[in-house]
Length: 135
Image (tube, rainbow, N blue to C red; front, side, top):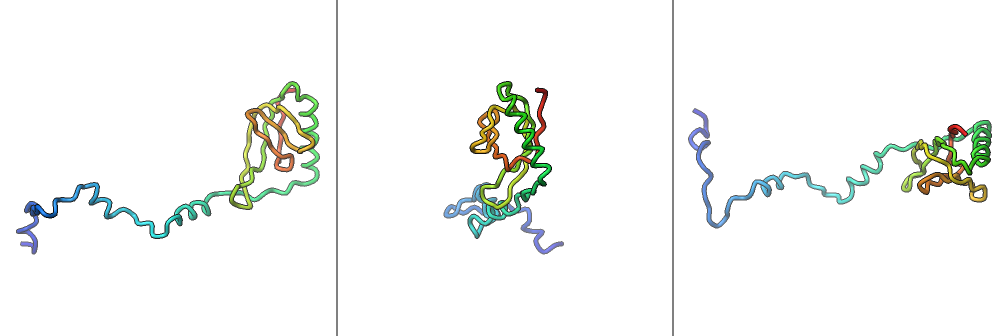
């Protein structure tokens, strides 16, 4: 016979002064405690994967420049382009590389930006690759 065998199957004592706590409130006692408010968000931000900017060679820059000129020559046709570009992070000195396939709508040589459909604008310096669809 165990030490608690005589009381293990008894009902909980009833106390009119202190009614039984709901299951939800009882579970809340064991919820994690965030003693450092906002610290979890910072940990998430630091652990977010990002990439450093790739430095392009002069040859690759020349190829991209030639492709941009070819797009500019056919801009009225709004050629379909697949662009891989660096998207700078708003909070860090790094970013991520994105690839997007959409029609080109404008080449802005003054601001050095490629404008794509859906108001997407990419700086020439951020582009690392362009593939032009059928022109």
